[in-house]
Length: 192
Image 1 (spheres, rainbow, N blue to C red):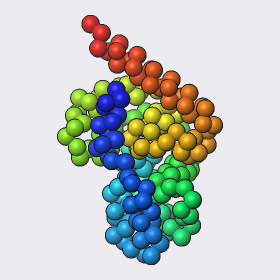
Image 2: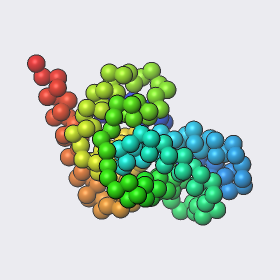
Image 3: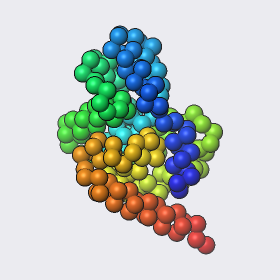
């Protein structure tokens, strides 16, 4: 399972914080190419977080687009005290929560929404994706968010705790519990 998540991480790539800082400076200067590069380097993590909160591919796409519009409009508010990725994911989380409140409910992920996550790498096959989807479906929403933020977005547990507004020990505990569940699920599926 961890190898599959590592493949997702390599598929999406963990953006270099220094490169993102440069792109944020370009954004503040009004450079549209910096926005395009920021989008290209971070869209999978932004979309993944929105999808894990909303459970709807359509809504996640809307929130992803709104995140970059907001980043463009509010880039002057960014302070390099944290990381650009954490700043973007905080915008994403807030927009997703607002949409969730407006909608008033969550939905299960359909196959088409799962496959809407960018898949540009041949290292993640449709079969791998199906196994990952089945395994992740046994996790709670919060466990799934923590695993995806750590494995796919490359955030550290401390950053996840801040983003999700949870104590660090809770994030660590939920992450370990989620990995244990995933291991049990995958070993059970492989049993004759």
